[in-house]
Length: 218
Image (cartoon, rainbow, N blue to C red; front, side, top):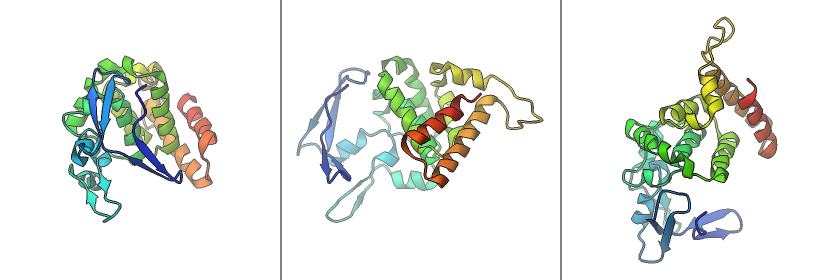
């Protein structure tokens, strides 16, 4: 993977990521060099982020919110919109869209979906460890799995998980399962299990086991 990014930790509770400037040498996970220093502006740093909701900063001295891409507006409207210009530079961002849709119940707009589709041809460049990490975040923090799987299909990333394609092409008896195909049914069971885990305070590996069981139960 890439070299460690400049992050300061305070009491193991707060992370302060220093502003940095990325220099891409390719589309792979490790094909990036970065600069960090007083000459890197906050706007430069925020402009290389993936989504507007992730490009918000706060001045810890004045509490001022710095939001140059109107991320708070998008959050209020329920949108997960990418920042134009740099989104497709990182091959794993399609998967990040998938898991963040599930976590925050936000909806990408048309241009963001199109940017995600561009990344399908580069999926093979994502290390297996990073694919796994996105699924772990999905299981530990997701709340709306049906929306997330719809996005995965829309950006042509579902093809890399053949089991999901099979679930999506398998119909159910409408008398017992009026919701539709097995993928939609599976997504609904994942959403239900996430709610159960939240209500019962189930976290960590125990939650992962339960969510993984729901994914493969059919």
